[in-house]
Image 1 (cartoon, rainbow, N blue to C red):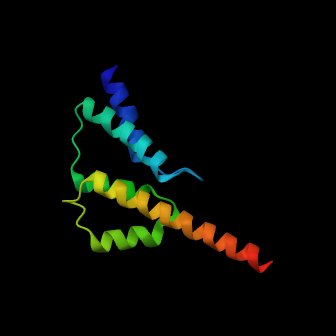
Image 2: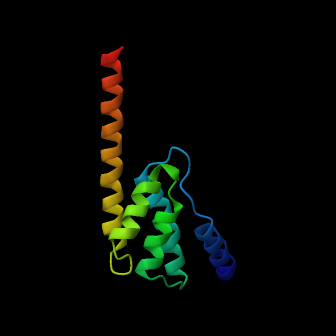
Length: 109
């Protein structure tokens, strides 16, 4: 039973992607759940593998940010917590800019 569960979680990890309309905290929560259970079953991950997987699962709206992070950060030494916090900050900033654009459009009408 343990082996079946581990294989199911591995497949879930391999196919993991951001769902439409999903927020970064929710993506990270789902990802952490899977990874923690795999670790509990004996799977070993390194920092770079986890960080890369998080970035690669994000949808197209994140593409420019993901490229910038790949170019400027050493994913083998950065913690997943640091990356997670950076993504949350970026999402807040993107939402702030979107709200600002909507306000500008309302004033223009």
